[in-house]
Image (cartoon, rainbow, N blue to C red; front, side, top):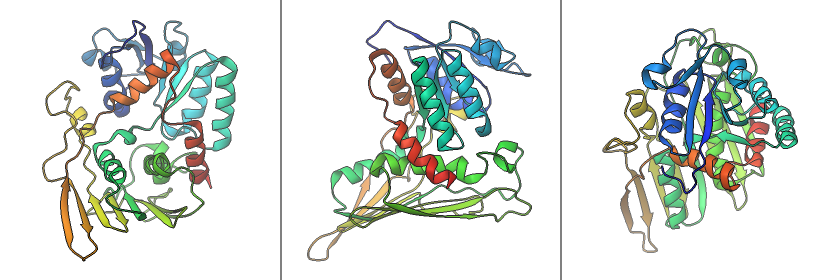
Length: 341
């Protein structure tokens, strides 16, 4: 990604686990507007294998005390987002924070006030707005072919019937459980389309043996003009259903979850490699419409190419040119109020 400015923003990552390796470092190192200078690695020093010129700090304090670093990516466990965001802002850094931004809306508002007080910006890492499958959904909605939308279902399912090793996801602590893990993805997609619901109803479940946290949730969101949206996630789905199901007055759209970026990046594919972000064959969405005579028409909707690079482009242009960042504070407060309720 090229820029129209000569300004380069020096960035640092607070962790080099899966999210650092997959969702942040490849983009910060590829985008011409960023210089990925440093990563925190408390024990194993793996980042230099991927980025030979990287600095590897032993602690978060060391990275935050680096005066050259302007943007800090907060990609530590969920329950530490508030603490680390506050520390970074107090050190005069802009921050890009993984989901969930914080555990509560009160924590979020406190950080907003702090950022305003020190003159720094907060960016929310809601990458699923840039998934190829969600881009297909937006394309169909914008086409008007469904007519008035009646109902929309979003699912994000997995099958993991054992308790995982990550305490911040599996222990009964702040911002743990499936709701705080996958809920931010699904809710942000809905909020990006429709904004704040008129009302909502949430159900949580605990189904795995000995689980301390929710491993199932469903939320019904009610919007004006009788639009009902359902978001659902479960860790015990052997045969996943369609990720997106939309029903309108004139038709239906069905789409599998198919964004390939995470899988490709885990396999060390580069953003510049041919085929990056292109969904596997057979995953295209199906749009079925009906005319006034009752005749049905089926249309395959080719998927857009997925890329999270525009998220980093948005961060860059917000910092350099003060352009509005697409994920707003209001969006995040709406999301957090539903998560914490």
